[in-house]
Amino acid sequence: MATPSSFSITTPIFYVNDVPHIGHAYTQVAADVLARWHRQSGDDTWFLTGTDEHGQKILRTATANGVTPKEWADQLVKSAWLPLLETIDISNDDFIRTTEPRHEENVQKFLQKLYDDGHVYDGEFEALYCVGCEEFKPKSEIVDGTGAFEGEKVCIIHSKPLELLQEKNYFFRMSAFQDRLLALYEERPDFVQPPSARNEVIAFVQQGLDDLSISRSSFDWGIPIPWDSSHVTYVWFDALLNYITAAGYGSDEAKFDERWPATHVVGKDILRFHAVIWPAMLMAAGIEVPKQVFAHGWLLVGGEKMSKSKLTGIAPNEITDVFGSDAFRYYFSRAVSFGHDGSFSWEDLASRYQAELANGFGNLASRVLAMNVKYFDGVVPAAAEETEADAAIRELVARAAVAADEQMERLAVHEALASIWEIVDALNGYITDQEPWVLAKSEETRARLGTVLATATEGLRALAVLLSPVLTEATQKLWVALGADVALGELRAQNLREAGAWGLLPAGTKLGQLDALFPRIETAE
Image 1: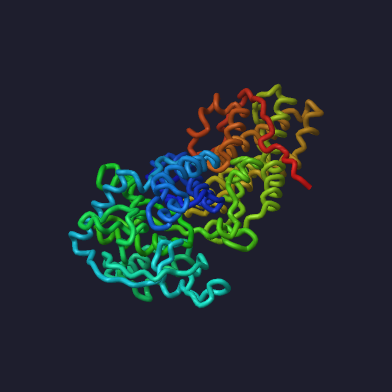
Image 2 (image 1 turned 45 degrees about the horizontal axis):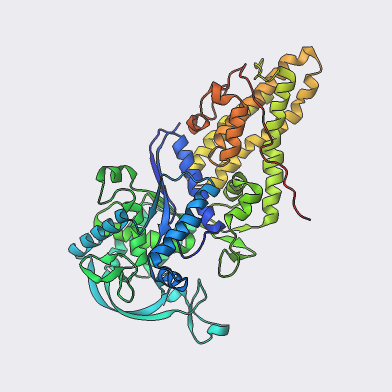
């Protein structure tokens, strides 16, 4: 069994120019499952998320809507981004906004240190800028426009014309860290994952790094540069620092030492900021680089990346209002191979809900509890002599629990859930093979009936614990129905790394009523 340790995990802080779609929620759920797993394994866990509220795009969006940037951000955070956390049952420990004093003040401390140490200089700059990305685009991401934008240079990601900006800016000497970054990737192969992301980052850095413009003087919605208030901080330079300002950098060094370094879960479209710019910034400041940067793939709808502008954005509550938050969390944890692109379809979601959740797990739980009520007056029966079939279940539970923990350590959420689901499938097959309804017909086979139902019930106990980081509502209902809250204590207090132990739910435990965990959903023809 792994010894408890500390585990810090972050999502990107999300840009408040619009409301969240399921692509944002997918990132949140993945990080939340990992945080819950570590927290319930006894690890000192810290989970951070939040919102990015500065920059030209926010300024333009707010102006177009007739409000100040701060009013726009306040309204969206309150009406959309904080409610999202409740909609999909996120267990974050902190929520950082880049307009908070704790962030703005310590961003200025960080900038001043880099300036004092000679890592920042001023210079003239002219380049093509994408407002959507809030980034001066590298040549590899600039393409010729088509249709209405023919004859113009457009961003490969947003397909919108780039703006030629010419400013006097302050620059971070990022080029000086090229060799140190390449050495980092070489010495720590798991620093950037999955391998495809690592290869992409290495290739990018090997081409040579330019210095990074870190200020803007053409607008004022941002954190002022501490030594020159006529400039504001480049939004990405500001935003990346949220990971340490929330952790205590500049304000609480003891807390910072506990929470840093962290694992960053990001979308692959912002990989370069997190795996190149961010560690270079930290190296310059003499701060430890992140523990890991893990880039997940895009969610595709109809073959295209999720996008509000292309009308492929789906609001999370469109799914949760029909299927519930557990189904949302399960689907995106299981159906998408974490680290690769995944396709979302309503048909696949509905199919998995019915086959895997309702018929697989939900029906298993209700059948076992109903037979305990019918044949043993609603208490957990005592197990008699163990057969090979019973031992196979016991051994599978132990094996699956160990495998799932190892897979969660690797951030392979989908693999961990598949390992746990082997128990669901095995228990369904076990009940079919053992035929407890036949065993119940004779007093001579009553002891065997007790063993079969004790085995199945103990398997449900293990499943309730192992699945609790994903199916937060259903597992709690099952835990109470098993009488485990009385016999063993709260579900969230059960150590996940001990979930595979056998015989924890005592014989004689009084069982309760269990309503359908995943009710039938009527779909329109």
